[in-house]
Image (cartoon, one colour):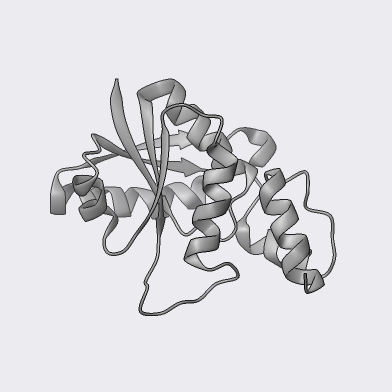
Amino acid sequence: MAKVFIPGSFDPLHNGHVDIVDQALDLFGEVVFGVLVNFAKPSGLFTPDERIELAVDTFADRTGVTVGAFEGLAIDVAATVGADFMVKGLRSAADYDIEQQMAHMNRSSSGIRTVFVPCNPAYSFVSSRFIREIASHGGDISHLVPAPVSTALTDKFSGG
């Protein structure tokens, strides 16, 4: 089996991300779920530590998944963790256009290849941006995110 690195900001983590991790586990056996952050410029809805905690809670029952926060280029992190490939989830042709260019640049720069995994169609419309927006207005996003994230979003926007 191979080890893969799945990079992203995951702010917040949603069920589309979980689907890609599950598919990568089935295909490769070992996944490093990497929350990429710029520690010099903290931003986002959730802090890096909160994102890590939510990911750890979400993937606690999955053997073969490790979670970490990383800074810098994804290709450098992939090399550091010993990943054989990077995995990127695709929702649409627009995602493919962006990710293909990035994959070519990454391979040209480092030799690491990117494997594209199409998302489950049930999650093809889900994005962290929309989840943040809906949750900020009190909308129900519980069917789009793992339970720990749903609770954290409710707490964040209710002042809890």
